[in-house]
Image (cartoon, rainbow, N blue to C red; front, top):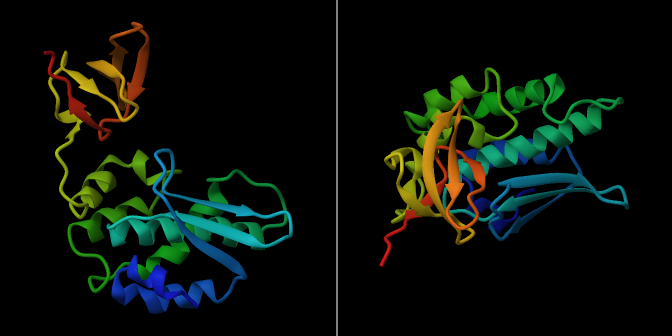
Length: 201
């Protein structure tokens, strides 16, 4: 069963469905401090127990999607007897199967519902790789004074989450090529990365 802390992070109408899935597995669910590189994680511990960690967030819709993403990993690990790609066909099918019952307006509001329905047709390894889904989810994040890189003009200087200063360059396929001012090194940034404009003194 989902404990009270987990219930607080989920859309109310999704709790019962989540309980139905979680009750099928012997899994330890933990909420952890937000990590920059991932929203959640699944692994099997040395003692054979299953562990899913989920980033704390005020966005209940992102939390639910992440939970189902990681439960899909657990489902694949528990049912497939051979080694498979982490986000290959087996995981995509598991994620779609687990996610479908949640696609209802009592759980996800429009337009997020329609974007998510499109996403699960061929889910990506990370929700952050689906620009439309990222932007639909951001509408339910707490307000912030940060800018998204795709909103900045080319040539604009910005400060990344690690405190380094970059200059925005051109779009290369799906990411922006940016130059670190101090070193001149080039880095690729997701268009929806949150940054602060740099104002030189």
